[in-house]
Length: 627
Image (cartoon, rainbow, N blue to C red; front, side, top):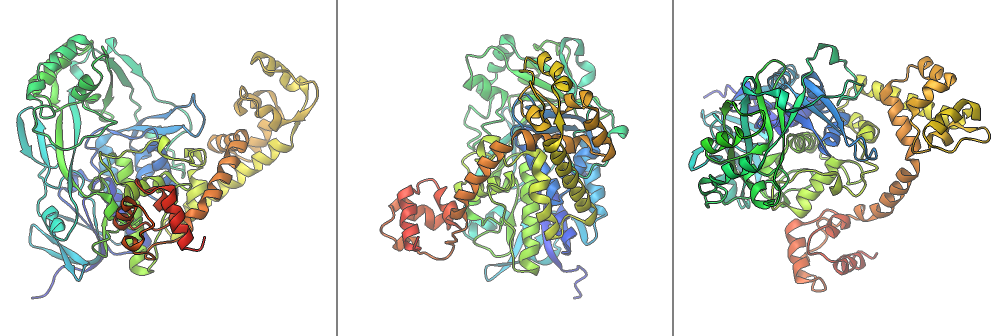
């Protein structure tokens, strides 16, 4: 019988944040791609918080954008509030975050995918993989359709054997009102993959008409030049900006919630899997932090016009009656109505130590995992993995190459190296503290680090690259001007004295004034006309001004960290993949032999980060390599 279905280069299973970036990247690079999803109306669904970014997560989105990915652009198109977090700290800690219209975000992603050449979509459930001689060949769906491809990327999110809990009520599903998927876990386990279970949760959704906002603290976003994408489309004029609100629990709330602990699946033994440490449920907070008499809650709008609100900080799987009773004891929530209660969900994942840095599986050639299937949590971590899996699937298929980012090049590099080297024992999320070189991995500098790489790959198009080149040229022009422009005491002393900074006694270069911690470049525009004229004459945008100021103020710290990274990078350049049978190296500790055999590190640097591999073990490997 004639096969009516086309063959593909790459099949992506799942259209969440990982799947969308994977399919988009591979297609933009020139592969023929099929994206299989259960529901085309829920592409890139914001299943939990209607926001993108946050601490370290915002840096990841900037990196995705710098490489030519789409999450930053889609976020800017869908944003209803933007904030730069941690501005009171140094620029290594600054983290962009945007509140989004959840429906627009999904619709914008779908529009982008539907208008990407070489990308087809199929609404169905992938139930099994086609495999021959440890090589993936395609997938079979629940409709009985068979699609052939030499690369398959699984981005199944929370759908693999998904099981949801609200109190003592449990029911199958991948998300509320969406079916779970079955078959793939059993097949992969039979093929030799290790499988585990994890848990996540989501809060109640609230009817904003029932909230007394006058009793809450309003939180507005910023109205400045910041956004996610470096390509500077100005969406701000077309967007409706909406505030968020802060509320607090109290002892009465806690008492009401504790009454439901006996029926909580977290405490009565129903849920056996591990949940996220850094986004705990409200009942976990009450149990872990029993001494606290209140907890912050953030009421966040789900869109521009909807009355639906997300209650950040109130994730729960308690019985719905208990959730509602507790909510009505919060100030401002006395008459609250809800659209649906919070719930917990358990799902299958595959420990990521079974992957190479490319996110290809070690057991099956051509098979890649990305997103929550690897034990991560968060849209941003998922999108980053999807992008890297899509790029690597394309490169391996057409050029027999791979694309790996190092830990000193990107938070994406830290994320993937942590996953494949250390594995996970709880849902992984990114923090700035996980990066050794966070001064080098700033959000303002992501394009400088990664856009040349994206352009070389072919993922960054000519327009994006030209915008980047223009930015770097103008940044360096401004830096050169500030380093060489002289100022006199009478021009700046009044400002210095007003800021309790020592006045000048003689003329100095402008860079010396700017290097003082109290001084900001924007303050100097107002008192030094030639500087203001220079910026206007060269049409230097505020984003470029900020980048130049950071580069000048923190040049010593940046240079010191770069020297340290370069010094340690020699270990990352010592390739050991395939060179040793570790079980035969009796000079290594037993634990090191076991861990090295399991992980099969690519480099000495990666080996040194494996738990249980000591510096003495690393010295043995270096000696064996003649180092």
